[in-house]
Image 1: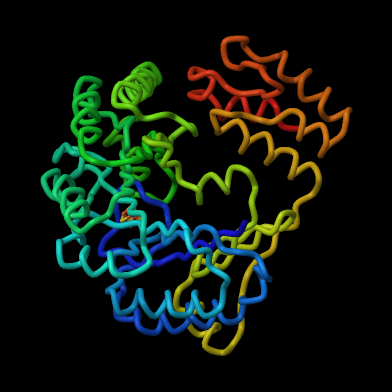
Image 2: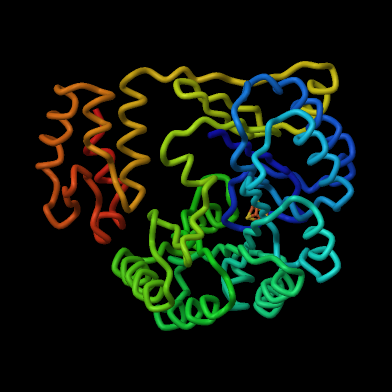
Length: 373
Ligand code: SF4
C-alpha cells in the first residue's frame, strides 16, 4: 500500500495557534501548481509499481485552490501513479471556502473525503483562534457538503483553550456530533513557538489551561464521542461506521508514503525525506528540474522508538509479536521491563498487544519517552 500527501501552502491569514507552513501570497498559485506537477513528474518512480490507496491534500488550505487548479493536479497524479479504484482521497477545507457551488464542483473531482477545519462552534473561541469563519458558517459548511453529495466528512475540533469551560465543550461537541459527520479529529491546543498564542503567553496576556481542566475536557471528549456512536482509534481520532482515516492510519503503522510540496515529508521505511518549507525556492527548483530535500536516515534505534511512539498513539497499541519478530528477544524483553516501571493504571497488555488506557493516553508523551531506548 502507498499513500501520497500533497501540501498546499496557502492560507488567507494565519490562525493564532498554527505552526504549519503556509503563506498568504496567492499571486504565485499558478506557478506553484506548475512546480507541483513538475515534482510529481520528477518523483514518479518513487512509488514504483505500488498501488496508491490514499491521497491526502493538506496544508495550508487546499480549499484555496480553485477546481481548475485541482484538476490539473489530479490529471498529473492519475497519469503518473497507479491509483487504486477505491483510493481514499481526502481534502482539507476551511468552512469559509465551502459554498454550495464550490462543493458541487469539488464533488465532480475524485475527492471522496472532506476534512473540515471547524475547530470550534463558539464565536468567542473562534476569534481567539483567529479563524476566518464563525460558528454558523462552520455548521453551514457541513450542511452544504451533505447537499453536494459528500458522505465521508471529518471535522477538526480543538479543546484545552483557557477560556473554554467544560460545560461549553460538552455542548459544542454534542452539537457538532449531531451533524451528519463520520469522523472527528479533536486536538488539545498546543501553544507552539512562533505562533501568536505563544507570543501572548510569553507576554503574560494568556495562560495555559490547567492540567485538571484539560483532563476533564479529554474525559468529556471520550464520553461524548461514545454517546454519539464514535469509536476512538487513536489519541485524537474518532470514527463512526468504521470510517477511520486510512491515510492517517498508514502513518501510525509506518507505511511508506510520498510527500509532495513545500514542507511535505516522505517516508520510505528507513528514511524520512523533508522538502524545505519555502515555496518561492520550491517553484524555482522544480521548474529547473531540481528537487531540494533533507534526508534523515533512521537507525534501528530510531525505528524501534518510532514503532513504540506510533503504536502507543493508537487504541490497538503495539503488536508485541511483530515487535519481537522485528527487533529480537532482547529488545522485546527490555521493552516489557521498562513498561513495568509505569503506573499500572496507564497501560494494559492483552492478546499480545501493549496499549495505553484512556488515562495513559492523556499523558502519553511522558509514557512514550519513558519507553524509548
Ligand atoms: S487555516 Fe489551517 S493551515 Fe492555515 S493558518 Fe489556519 S490552521 Fe494553519
